Amino acid sequence: MKLHQVRVYKSEENLERKDQLAWKIAEVAADPVAVSEEVTEMVINRIIDNASVAAASLTRKPVVSARSQAMAHPKTSNGAGANVFGEAAEKRISPEWAAWANGVAVRELDYHDTFLAADYSHPGDNIPPILAVAQHLGVNGADLIRGIATGYEIQVDLVRAICLHKHKIDHVAHLGPSAAAGIGTMLKLPVETIFQAIGQALHTTTATRQSRKGEISSWKAHAPAFAGKMAVEAVDRAMRGETSPTPIYEGEDGVIAWMLDGPEANYSVPLPEKGEAKRSILDTYTKEHSAEYQAQAWIDLARKLNREHPDIADPKNVESVVIHTSHHTHYVIGSGANDPQKYDPTASRETLDHSIPYIFTVALQDGAWHHVDSYAPARAARPDTVELWNKTTTLEDKEWTRRYHSVDPNEKAFGGRVEVTLKDGSKIVDEIAVADAHPLGARPFAREQYIQKFKTLAADVLDSTEIDRFLNLVQRLPELTAEEVTALTIVAKPGILTSVSTPAGIF
Image 1 (cartoon, rainbow, N blue to C red):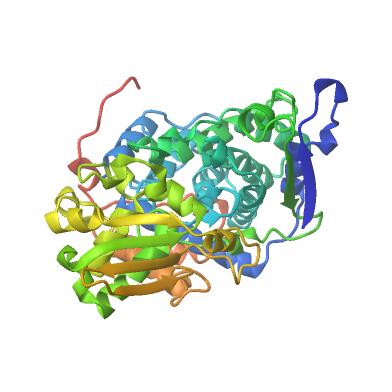
Image 2 (image 1 turned 120 degrees about the horizontal axis):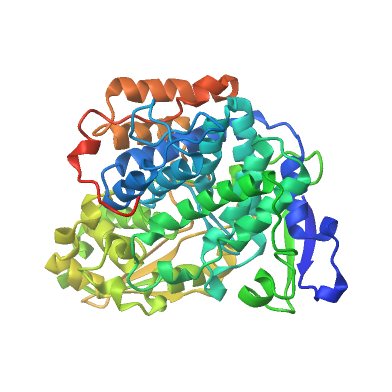
């Protein structure tokens, strides 16, 4: 990896294109380096993972809404169209709208992969737009893999170096450029075209983090899908010869100067050197539980405490529960956010999955976590839960913050220490560094676990023959023909999609 120094330039400094971050990203995307077997296997895992959570969300309101919008946009004349999760395979629509519908389905349950560093990300959000374009334009499995590997690489590299959230910019600002770069790789586009697409994708996907603050709305699921849709459109415009604001990152009126660290900013962005394999997907991690990633380890610790100290599930026995954790966890999903909604039993599911006091309390009491039952209004309103929930707070611990930001994968941690003070004054103290499913956790996810997650989440909405068909197909990804790539979708059981009403809008 090579570190690229990125700063703001005044217009009269005339920063050459070859020295701009967007151009350097485009060069990485255009580099025809081979994809390793290890990366290929992980790409397959993440396509399975995305299909798992999409299947489980097919009848949820935001997904139904996005799908109904998408289905109003039939395929264009320049390709075969793309699939929409749940719909019959022969129903094909315009690729940017397939990216939209499938992106919402993947993101709705907050249940797929993650990478956390200077900023946050869900790199699996790259897959829906890249796959939609592949299906529309007739791309084979090997080239699809190359595109997805690039999408992951660029998003992870940007997340390693450039913090968005401290400036209240939503993390999908790193997704637009990465998805555009991934599509560029897959289509073997020239550097100039990818460069223009990256600039447009970034310019159109910068938005505030209010979507993840206070009363969190259904837009949280739509935000990455919108970025993916914008990436598809940006590549289309760039292929037609249209240009983008330049320099998009470094300009004196650009993203860094006015949305991020300002005119004096300086970032060191790591990118693969020419000929270097794109391997960053291997540094990402998926979720065993449907909740914000920084809650994963805490759910596992709560389950352990439930087994070892069942009495602390009863609020009558507990004086307080204090979670000592990283800055990010405390201020984003902990009591440090100062969001009263994080303690509101009537809060939305989106809000509750960003409340570590709620998540820890329910996992502690139930000894388990379920993607639907744990968020049910009746579950959130249970009096003993509300009582224990309100006794649970978070504090930043500088050592856990340091470990959160560590570049050493063996030291990097997303957990912390919990202190449960009992009514008699005694304390129960325990800690956890990473989730059980993390590569360094107690039960790391491998192909077997990805397949089981898919079978579990898809069981109620897909026929067993459809589950087997999809798994058999996706595991042959490197050898798939363009025609077979068009079958990389999931088709719901008869009656599943029609069991929910379709909202009306303009389209």
